[in-house]
Length: 174
Image 1 (cartoon, helix red, strand yellow):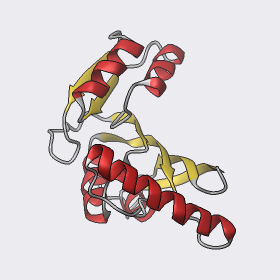
Image 2 (image 1 turned 180 degrees about the horizontal axis):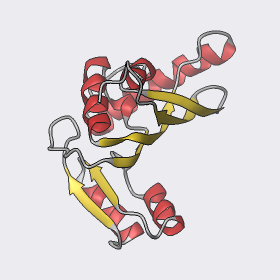
Image 3 (image 1 turned 90 degrees about the horizontal axis):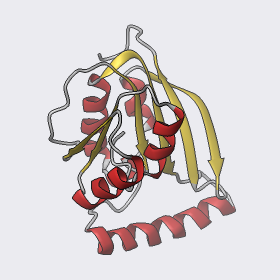
Image 4 (image 1 turned 180 degrees about the vertical axis):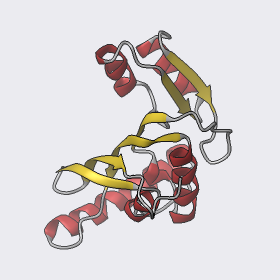
């Protein structure tokens, strides 16, 4: 789990999957502290670090979880972080993603554009986030052998939850 924040999802996941071994990475010491307090230590290794730069061993992770994480990066940075996480995962891994999204057209598209602009402005001030627009993670995941298995869209098209599965075919860069 990378950039998962205060550990709400982590705590639920660990409770439902008590036999799992979880590596939890966040660049904020405060978020790691909150996650540790919420989820405990059993079966969880907490790491403070930047997913763009910290060492990520090829450990064959069978699940990658990134909730509202990829939208913090521009396209070039997304390429780097997705490549690094894909290389740390197994050839049959899954990737669970929750992100903001920009609908292509209609009233939902206009509504999302306004909200996304406000959100990026807020997070730019609050966290010094430099990214100001969404980059599309989908083609990058596909280049690393992942295929979209299911998607749920909510909040008038502004949010997406996606489950990707690794496909180790001839076009996969493992």
